[in-house]
Image (cartoon, rainbow, N blue to C red; front, side):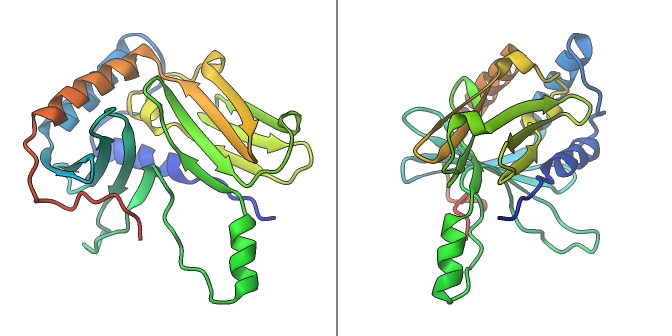
Length: 234
């Protein structure tokens, strides 16, 4: 079974830097300033909204040309999808990079054996709750004691390992990076059920405040049919 290492950390640090935010981590005034900076960046972006299929879809266009698209459940206000896109140095539009929501479906070969193998491979995705960042890895048919979930402070990432060496995953928390907030080991937990490993990280108060403020902003937008805000991956 092949194991993949997440590359999202470098991508989002790159996004942060191009948006003019310095990558410094820690609690206190620096973290609070970074949170406010990110709120200001979001507020100053060009936004369009679309209400469709029970979802509030928001498209953000930043001053540097980068785009972010989000989907919220209209009834619960929970974030369903967040993805990013940016143009290359040659001006070619890039593909959407999913941060929250179902991963992009890569077309499988028509060979039934290949399709069967792909269906049994682990599927990594992020699906947040109101109070926690949450990652789910499906197709992991092991008991909970086989897993080890820890943090690597120097790399600002979470690492999942198995004692049988069948699965390994390293990934960052882009929300904490954007707001320059430290990782807290006590906020991390995990459980396993129905062949799915669920890793949760309790959102710090700064993130909860940021999300509440952002939600107020997007609710002010009148839904239109403008903008590429569909988070359905194809």
